[in-house]
View 1 (cartoon, rainbow, N blue to C red):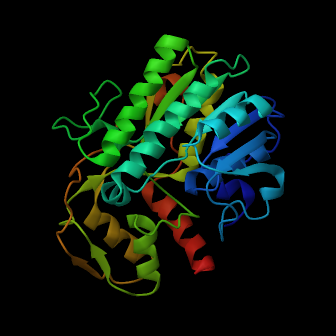
View 2 (cartoon, rainbow, N blue to C red; view 1 turned 60 degrees about the vertical axis):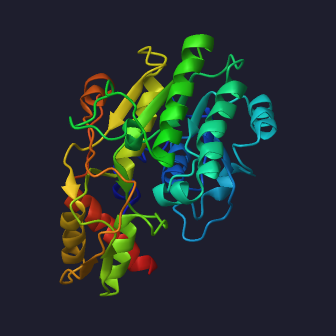
Length: 334
């Protein structure tokens, strides 16, 4: 993955006076985004308590770093467990990333998605509401929470109109965060991101890792839609920088109760993305359009002007650079 600084998009600056010895609780710390965020926090000197329903995932970004994490196996669905963690470790910062994050699985198992995404979020907020040590809680929502709108890009003021199980679960969690801020003054902020990609993502139901895997093997990639669905794609370290900025500035700039979009603002179609991945893998594009996608939003992308203005957040990675680093990582590990 290259040098430490390069592999983390310039985030790994070693000790940081703000994060040094900060008690940070990360749910879903073994997941794709969670592992990246956790590693950066450790490098910045934070004391990380992590919760995940899986431990020791193979080929993780956290390989070699887990000894510096207080890892706990369990689910956010258990309020008793969440409350015990808050009482014992008294976190100052919380990043809530644990979720049923795959749209197709949420459609297949909607009750599970609702339990994890809605009840899990409510459990975190309920456990946090009497914690006077808590400075900030950042809850991962999704661009899907906005649902389908004719007017694009989505802004933070765009109404939440989720219609499908995953979308509704995220929109519901957003509203619960708002309720706990307005009613109990829990210092919570919500993030809504474009499609996150980068090294270490093993959810091959997602387009980027699956297309890279197929391209490196010189195999045909199956496109479930008609290839014209559009999304924006954001490199994982850019999202990590946004999360850290929001948590750090929430109290100072009175940002609790608000939502922030993180996006590069450059949507591309599925077909364009697949062709680009194959060519960066030095292969002629090989794909088959199935046109079977149902219960999914055709066009969605975000505007991140608020994050740029208030947080001074800027994505460092364009799509080509991000894909090159991602492909290089998969070449090594596959």
